[in-house]
Length: 519
Image 1 (spheres, rainbow, N blue to C red):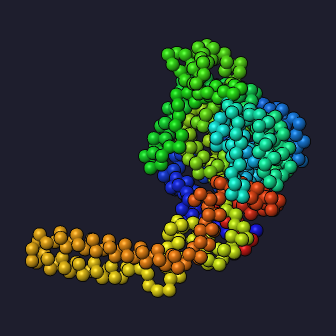
Image 2: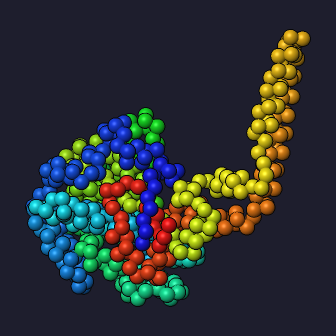
């Protein structure tokens, strides 16, 4: 596989906040801890505090979670290493998208695995374990219930509610049978009882041999380590104050907040329920249910059943950092943007803020598209132009005659300038009339020019149709391929696809990757 790289800025697909971060602009220095370079992991290791008690609970819970799974040697080793005080994790999190969802899910995990490899080489005295955090408590089923394969959308419909990790996979079986060429490991995964079990199973099949640990934090044992934060947030609302203050400071730099804290940033979690907790006149109610508690009842529930409290997007990152010996979080632009709002909250809870490592980004160019790109003589940078601008430029560059009227329009405007001077010498009231006529004439000429361009595009319709086919394939619905297409588009024809990504992607090279077999 041949790898070409573009600066993120050249793609015109990334926010100014993300670009400022990867370029290490000083205006963001107060919103993160350390820049994601290999050398900055040493002080991060020295700062990270992780108690023996928390490490023991983590290992015990992972042992429970992996019952019934025969781990690959690398995974078995990493699960064992997590008990050692010199072992740290690099983590990414993601929703439980069916059949892995968009391609960038694979890229996130590849980044985590490769980051651990690079850090192990740089710091041999320490162990680094890649972790995938399953968002099993998320309840937004509409975001995960579909995926796109060979241009077709496949969707799982069910009337189940609550945390998606609890969903039974029984109703997905008709969809499993509908997908052509579906690998057996997916069929075996979705034969499990719950969606969380299914996702752990297929992720383990794809990445267990590289030592990836899958964690489901929907756990009584792990949440027992978080009871202090649950109580503080529900009864003191500390997170709202800290996150709001940081968000306001970020907004002053022109970056809109991605997430908004509530007074209480926990959901009540039970079978078929994940409802927000709100305080009203001293009572704590679960929104859209009849459930409500007194302060004393809620305190007892936190103490005895902490698994019934599910953090929202504000507190999930803190929960992660408190139950893992974690050094860095791997995420995309949207994720990193909300992490930038959280640092003061971490400081308030005396928890080290992780290094924020951008995931790898990429686009796969199959051979039939590559041939069209070469025939059209397009550069990789050309592909990221807006479609209309690219079509116009190609039409003009290949036109048989002069199409634009820039020279003629400029000459005419000079003439109108002279006419305006003449009008001023005759009668000042004539100036406005001459200016209006000049504007009207310029507009008419620009309209003629647009017609010339449209006519030239019609003459070159075959060439431009090929350009459309290229862009429609590489940028489905106008967005990046990695946000729409599923990895099976490439894995089915190339079972070494993930191995190739692991070989080619560099977790500390912050550029956009373009993968092809040539050019």
